[in-house]
Length: 512
Image 1 (cartoon, rainbow, N blue to C red):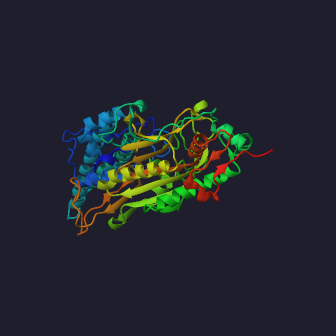
Image 2 (cartoon, rainbow, N blue to C red):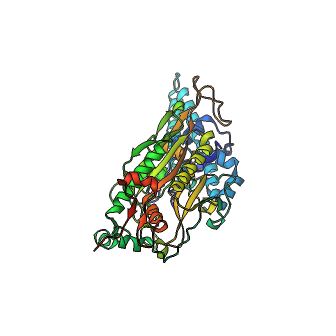
Image 3 (cartoon, helix red, strand yellow):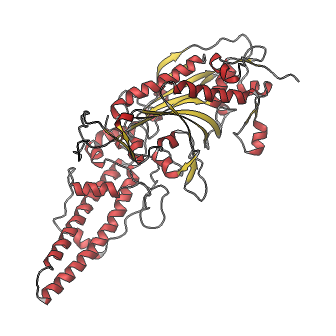
């Protein structure tokens, strides 16, 4: 469990530039017969250099050199190499395009080059030490020349080492998180129903979909929004405004009772934070809106700003698990989405959402995942919805997710189930990129792979992160309108929402 987030992936470049040619002296140095690859137990110095140098790229580069990364991630290359078969199987099961062979090749090249750099540094230091004593002029001049040559060779090697580590990081980022052993293997169709609540309502009249109901109840205006903003935008009107506010306030109120801290988040974030959370703001067919001539994006989910709230920090062990319930607007390009199945409010560019997010200790993340899905199920059951909870198959998992549960609710007007929420355990995938750690209390045993730390408090560990949807407003508006419609065109408001709508019980068609 503690190794689950070692595969870090999101915005790796489709291709990476080659290293610049070595200088003649560098080539001669590298061809010396004593050059060998380091074993997996590389020296502490090499490991430290790797951690400091290996950084992912965020925007790609041009020209002949490797693009300069802008942030660091703690990728455990040694673990990847020691578990090659498991990593390869995980890449295959998740239909990932990651090139494990290239990552392993680049890692071996990195270790070899790093060792040669260390050897040249040692030789340069030895020459410098020899020059401290009293020497014949000819001997001193020879040492000066040798030191100069070593310095030039070292500069060349260090430049190539930087490029190589950048290239290694870019390739390694395409490797997804590991997968829970109980997750079904295969495509979306292989996902398994783990729970079903309620049943489909039997209607004795012709069912209206939410678009027709919205028109008769004067709740939406898609035509005006299309003129003002473009397709897949909408105005909410009249009681639909109250319904959105009710859903948001109800969800925050209920989830807060479970010990979650309410947040309203920024809705514009740095591109690097989006990438560290596992999204691809600059990729082809991205769902992220990027702001031109800036390093900022509109958020597609509050998961991103909440994930970044403790970036580059060490959380007190006593504060874990730390739970948030966050309200935000969300913005998505919905690239490639089209067809009758996405009509109306089902798939839009802007919507309101209440998101749950948890930072916890590694041994608690499975329990927290169950807590999140239970909260979701309780919320939707209290509204009287018919839904099923799915354990999503490996081919449907995003790069950060170790395991994901989706909830699909019955939407009679659309005549199908539609996704209304998901709950994902991302283990330490995001925290290794965001730099979020905790320091276990002295009574806690260290993980098997932990290095001995200084002081009595012990070494830090990466937290695990989890996220889950409490309310995606447009999808729940669809469910409420279509499931609780009446023959006379009215819609009954679920009881839990009525106190948040001023006691309103029924939506009625407007009289002309």
